[in-house]
Image (cartoon, rainbow, N blue to C red):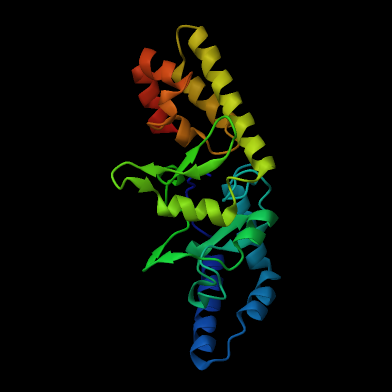
Length: 244
């Protein structure tokens, strides 16, 4: 999982979503709303199709799912489920891109703790604040919060809902990505003098799974070869951390 920067929609698309949301709110207030029917009708419009294209472009040429970052993102996902939160159904900030499997697993689940969402929203949060990675199995797990002396509740629920600790194909993709990143770093370290910008560009291009945030975290830097870069070239490490 990786943090992504949500782009601005074209003005026409944003206006369309605002009008749809206003209509939805009115129908909801009158008790006349069938959000599934309304969304299905809107989803067939050119505007919603263009919104899907915008989300796909945001995730790069391979159009990865914003949850697992492994499979092709093929449809618009409501972070807050539209059935439970119709007042968010057409809000641009609530729309994500997901694959078929993540969409099926998440469904209308939206665990809360009081008024706090317990799922990670990758458009506004760094997932690695709540998640950890096992480079041997490739599984994502909840991050252990030392200050709270407990596993991150948000990380735990995200892993539980999306089953990020038991999807073998996804795990294999994460392991392959980690191994590619490690191989790039080993080659750079073996060369002696490191061209920092070239290294950053190469790492970004190879990061299919959004792992660089973890690799250049306090946890990732304890493992070779990321540990070696941190110890031998601290200035390069810091530039990579800030850029990645």
